[in-house]
Every structure is written in C-alpha cells, then in structure tokens.
Image 1 (cartoon, rainbow, N blue to C red):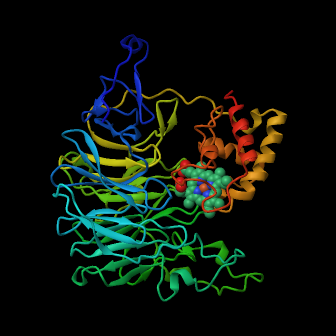
Image 2: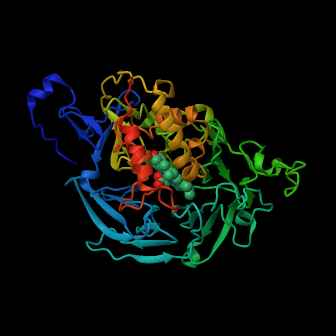
Image 3: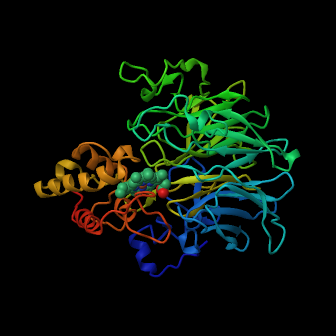
Length: 510
Ligand code: HEC
C-alpha cells in the first residue's frame, strides 16, 4: 500500500534493495501484481506482492475475504486481549485500508454468507453485516460458543446448504488432569456438551440450533468443502508433543458421527503414550485406536495448518481444484503455503505436496520468517493472504519470480560458541525463566542447556545481539496488545527479564 519513497537514488546503484516494507526488502522497480515484490521463493512465473503492512495499522490480521465487488474484508485480532479486534476493509482501486468495526473481542473467523452478508467471529459469538452499506451495523447471529482453555478463537465456514460449520477447539492439549494424568473418558471431548468437535448450526433454525457432526478433533482452524463431491475436510492441528517429528498434522475427511481420536489416538491408529495402560497407569483401559478415524493425508509435524481452500480461479490453471493450505508453524516444516493434488476419488493426497510460497525462514534481512494464516481468492484468481506476526496483507499472483535469493544464511551461533560465562548465564536463565514459566506450554523450550539454546536460535526466538527483535525477550515484556508471556500466568521478574536482554544483546554471530 505504501508507495516507496526512494530517499537516495544513489543508494540503488550500490544495492538492489532500496527499502524495507513490513520487514521485507523491496525495490522500486520490482513489482508483483502492482505491489512491491517480496524476495520469496515461488514456482516459476509467480510472485508475492506486499499489499499492506503495520504502517497501515495492521496488528495481527488473521482472516481475509474477497468480496464479489472486488474489495477485501480482513479480521484483525490485534492480540490476545479482550475487545481490541478490528474488522478492516481494503479497497484495491484506491489502495486504502479503512476500519469498519473496532473493539471486537478476539476478531477472527470470516466468511461470506449465502445471503450476501459478511459473517465474522469474535470470542463466543458470530456477527453479520451488510458490506454494501456505507456505514454497516453488525447483528449478532449466534452467541454462547465455548471459549474455555486454549482455543478462544472462532472459526467457521458455510456448507453448500448455507448451514454454519463451526470449530469448537479442545480446551486443553491432551485432556490431562492437574497432575498430568490421563482422563478416560476425557470429559472435554465426551461430555454432554463435547468440545474438540465441529458443530453444524442449521440455516433453517436461523443458526440457533446445532448438532455435533464430528468429534475428537483437537482444533479445526482449517476447514474446506471440495466443490465437486461436497465433502468436508478438516486440517488438524495435532497435539503439542515435544518431539520434532511427531505427531504429524492431518487432513481429515469429515464423515457425520465419526470420532477422530483426540486425545487418545492420532495419525493412523497411534496411541497417545499418555493414554497407554501400564502397571503404573491403570486409570485408562486398553484403548483400541482402530475405532477412530484415520486422516486421508498427513502434513509435517507442528506445521500448523491455519487455513485451507480448494482453489477455483482463473489465474492458476495448474492449481485448479487442488487443496491450498497455509502452514503457520515456526518450526522448519512450517511457514509456507503448499498445495496438495487430489486423487481419482477427489481426495487430497499428502504425497503430492508442492510448495507455492517458501524460503521464508527469515533470511539476511531480505525477508522475515513467514506467518501465513487466512487466504482468499480474488475475482481475477490471485490468492490473497494475511500474515499475523509480520502484520501484512500479501498477494500470490502471476508475474516474474523474485530474483535468485541464493545468499546463504549467515552461519548461526550455537551453544558451542558461547564463552564459559555466557554458558553459565544461559544455564541460570534456562532454569529461572524457561523451566519455571514457559516449558509447561512450550515443550520445545525444555531440555538441557545445549539443546534449548540451539532450539531457541534455530526457531528464531533469539536474534543474537538484538533483544528488541528476539521474541523470547519481547514477549515477556508487558505490552498493550496483551501478548505477554507466560500466557495468563505470573509475569517474569523484571530483573530476570533485564538479564535475559543483556545476555541476548551480548551474543555475537560467529
Ligand atoms: C499457558 C501456556 C503458555 C505459557 C506458560 C507460555 N506460553 Fe508462550 N505461547 C503460548 C501460546 C498459546 C502461544 C501462541 C499464541 C501467541 O503467539 O500469542 C505462545 C506464543 C509464544 C511466542 C511466539 C511464538 C511464535 O510462534 O513466534 C513466544 C516467543 C512465547 N510464547 C514465549 C514464551 C515464553 C518466553 C514463556 C515463558 C516466560 C511462555 N511463552 C510461556 C502459551 C504459553
């Protein structure tokens, strides 16, 4: 959205990249679909343009919707804080982003209704408004969605009959009790008002009554209907095991009345180790995983599918009908957009995964680490998407690819490069901060000093020499967006936080 000010033309001759936009290096003459081109890897003849950034006011955009008239609606949750979300409208003709609603509690889900109204989610509720009105009023469609625990964000789609399919995420990661013991049956998923389900609110009831159509789904942030078969698919964000390779994320074909296994079983009939009956673990019976539905396709572990759609549009013939998935995860396998081919039965197949937008791990100041979330297809077939951490709206379109982005990443610092004093200081911080306040939710931050330090570097939580850009540090600081860690817990002592800042600032890349 920003026109690039070329402050000093002479700089251009020295460097191809004249400016940064939303953390991406861009140059005046290099555009994609009319927007500054991001230096990302995409298939030949395609590119990514940067449409809007935090300079335009975006804070944590999560979903985007193309309106039939050509404008876009964006929901922006702002942060993990109540009543601060924004619903935006972007007009690509005038290149303007304007606010429609503010003060929305965890603004999230977004879809076009069968009545032409725009539906958007907030904590526990879904609203609608008429996008053709100049000053739209919002109307409550339904309220009372469960919000306990880890998954307060509302996500939904419409089915072909106009019913609303709503994700009700699991309140906890594995349904363990306060002593970390398994609970069988899990009260969260099997109770009278089960969570970890997809609910169907019928259009005929004015979205007032619902039935549970599938159970045992931990968090269905990606839902899509295959248009030829009418079948519903779910992208499962699997349990937070500490291991890097497991559990694989899943694409599930949703069949009415089925149970997909959470929290007992995952992937193709694997038993969650916590639910294994042993001499010491007699609280659970022997669980037969074969009674639970297996996924139709796998995605890499911890890749975090946060949106998906069956592409239909004129721009990318090669993508027609395929399943396009945004992977949000910050681990190696995440932060990219991929497509899956369908097999002869029109079922997505995990073996045919292709990368559409990648090489997005944060490179030499050329690009930040990607964080794609919601996607939508514009009238011309271009795929527009939002990133929540980099706070951008971007477009994936036909155009000449970004220049060869072959600079190798600088050699990273690793635990072995630390001085004796630094190693001792890290050992102290590891115990005093991470072990005490963070590892209960962030399993990857747990372990011996060496492995924890290397993970923090590899996963980009620590940027050596720069505490301001190190999320490990800035997420501990108090800030107005309510992003402060530990989530919902007692803030970390200021003195310890300062120590962590000093430790990070003193790190030097070898
Ligand atoms: C009660 C659970 C919980 C605890 C405890 C917790 N976190 Fe988090 N953390 C989360 C959740 C959920 C997210 C993802 C949502 C978000 O980014 O706000 C998150 C996200 C983060 C992120 C951003 C991750 C990314 O993808 O870039 C960082 C950094 C982080 N936490 C650091 C910490 C640190 C440091 C501590 C300890 C001081 C901590 N967290 C304690 C739940 C927790």
